[in-house]
Image (cartoon, rainbow over all chains, first blue to last red):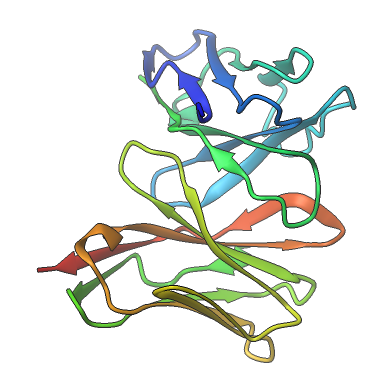
Length: 115
Length: 113
């Protein structure tokens, strides 16, 4: 079956522009996560969605970052007024549900470069 | 403050030998640990996990060891194969935060033919 897909795979933008990143989770997965990985660092949790519950936004680094998810399907991560420090790989993952030890399945990521 | 540390950015091992990847953590509340493997241009994929009630978990060529007193875990790959060349991430979680994984920075493993 299809895995998690993300688009675009690469994005180059100018400082100050807005960008929108898309994630298509595995069908039937109710939980969806966004992470950021800066060069040479581990994955940094950004936001989490579980079904129709309110998302956990505790990892979002600033109010320039926002994310939406329609039901249990596609999610978009939006970064407004991009800054150079936003350059990173943005990874999306999904899992069957929010539960301890539930395996997360990752997409290939979107590589964002802010010039 | 890094709660999960992988102090070796890279490791080179001869094919057929044992690869040992290390991970240290500072939060004694962590009770579940995972290793993920990542190839270039792909997302991480789950490899093996261990609960804090165990000190060893084995799956084929992969074994994870947990030393709670030292707050240290390691991943052993025996024998190492060329396809094992990848970046390996250690991650940890607590039952109270059952979906938030805290990740190490990764170790790049290179298997030499």
